[in-house]
Amino acid sequence: MSNSNIIKKIQASFLAEWRPNIKTWMEVEVFQKIKEWNKERIQKFKWLVIKIAWKSLLEKTITIRRKIGSFGVEKIFAIHSPNIEKIVVLRKFKVRRKSIKFIRGLTGKAARLKEIR
Image (cartoon, rainbow, N blue to C red):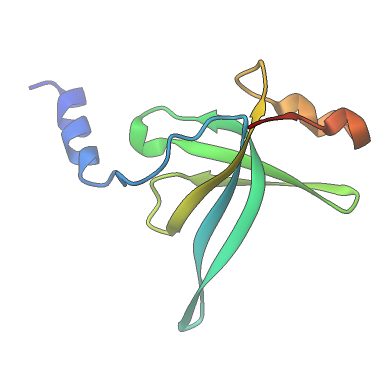
């Protein structure tokens, strides 16, 4: 048995099977567990997925972006992290690229994407 097969077998036990198949053209709502002192709460993030990256299935991450006021805020989440409570897909947009990082430089009407119904 090769090393890569052993690694895949070990990683399979840590994969969260219920995660949706997320693409870059989706607007998602991510519920993240946040621990503060001895309390635990769930923080909700409702943003646009602009990039997906992974080396192996367990290391899959998404970069999400939201415009807050005049600032753009980005956050990176590990999809199979135990801190992620759930991920909900809200809307899908029509995009012709794999990574839509070009939206960082756009403002106003230029930053709009066409929604798929």
